[in-house]
Image (tube, rainbow, N blue to C red; front, side, top):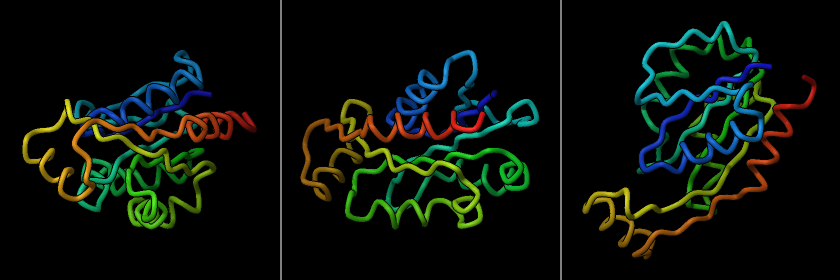
Length: 160
C-alpha cells in the first residue's frame, strides 16, 4: 500500500518523525513530502496519507492548514493518519483537536501525539529567548515518544 507522508517542519522534529514513520512502513512503500519544498500534489497514486505538523505559538503551521483546506475531499477518500509534535504535554490533546478539523479526526484511522523537541541549534535568537522565557529551558531537549511512532506504523499497516 503506497503512503504519502506529508509534513511541515520548522526546526526538524516533525521531519525526523516523518522519516521514522517512513522507515517503519518501508521506504519503498512510503514517500515523504515536505510542504516547504513540495507545492503541488497528486494524491491519486497513494492509498493512504499521513499528515504531520507541529505547534508553534499555539497553532499548527499554515502550510498544513492550507493543505488540509485544499485537499479535504481527497483526504476523506484515503486511509488517513494524523500526527502532531508538541512539547506542552498538558495541552497536547487540546492542541491536536485544534490543529486538525473534526471531520479529518473522525475519518483518521491513526491519530498520535508524538511529543516534541526544542532544537536550540536550529532556532534563531528570538526563538531561543522565547523558549527560555516560556518553557524555562536553555538547551536542546527531546521528548519524542518512539512508542507512538511504532503504534502509528502498526495502525497504518493494519487491514492492508
